[in-house]
Amino acid sequence: MDNNDKVILEEPVSDFWNVWYSELHNQEVGLSIKIKKMLYSGESEFQRIDVLDSCYFGKMLILYGSIMITEKDEFIYHEMITHVPMFTHPDVRNALIIGGGDGGTLRELIKHQSIKKITQVEIDKKVIEVSKKYFPEVAKEFDNPKVKLVYEDGAEFIKKTEEKYDLIIIDSSDPVGPAISLFSKSFYSYCFNALNDDGILTAQTESPFFNKNEVRKIYKNLKDIFPIVKMYLAYVPTYPSSLWSFALCSKKYDPVEDFDNNRYKNLNLKTNYYNCDIHKACFSLPNFVKELL
Ligand code: SPD
Figure 1: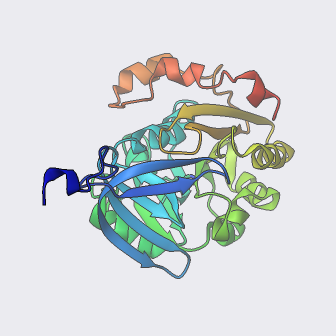
Figure 2: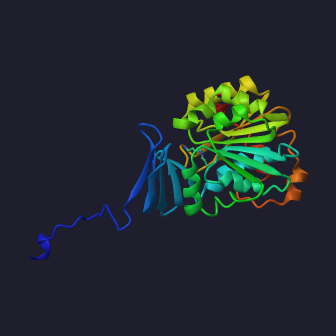
Figure 3: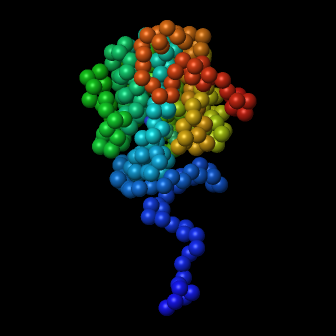
C-alpha cells in the first residue's frame, strides 16, 4: 500500500478529549462544554443528578439536565444572592435558606459573623450528599453549629414555621418539577409572613433574556406581596444567556439608599465578584429588562 491509498481526514474533527456536554437554552440555542470525565450519575426521589468534570469550568453539578454550579463560576451567583441582601439589612441574625443544596449560599452567609442562626430547608437530601462528596469547598458549612438542616419541601415548611427571620434566601433551581411552587404568589406571601417587620427576601429569578414570560410573572407575583421589589443582575457564564437576575424584596430597606459603605469596608469580606461598586451598579437595568417589569 503506498501513501496514495491511505484514507485520512485532512482536518481531524476529533481529538482525545472530544466529549461534550450540551445544555439547550431553548429549542434553537445551547451551551456546549468539553468534558474530561463523568464522576457521578444517579437519580434521587426528585430528579436526575450528574457530576461532570469539564476541561474549562472544573466540576459541574447538573440537576435535571441543567447546570446548577461549576467550580469556576459558582462564586458569582452565591456571592450575589447572599451579600446584596446582607449589606442592605443592617443586622441579620436569623436567616432561612430555601433550596441551595450545593451549600454555596450557606458558605457565603457564614462569612457574616453577625448571623446567629441559619435554617436551611432542602427537599433533596441526595443533592447535599453528592455536593459534600464532589464539591467539598462549596458544601463546607453544613456541619457548622449555627446551621439547622431540614429535609423538606420549602413550600410546605414556610406554611407552618413559627419562627421569624430577618432574611429569607430562595436559592432554588429553575421553575420545573418540585421547584415550581417556589415561584408562586402564595409561597411569597407565606415568606412575607415569616419575615420580621424589616425583613428581606432574595430569590434567583431566571434569565431576563431567555425567560421573559417567566420573569414577568415572577415579578408580578412578588410585587403583589412586597412593598419594595428590585431586580438586580449578575454575569454567570454557565447560565442561559449569562445574564442572570435576582429579586431583592423588602419590607423596609432600600438596597441602594440603605447600603452602608462603612459596614462593608469594616467587614473586610473576601469576595471575588461582589464589592460596593457592584452592589450599587447591579440594580441598573438595561431597557429591555426594565420593560419586563
Ligand atoms: N438554569 C440554572 C439555574 C440555577 C439556579 N440555581 C442554582 C443553585 C445554586 N446554588
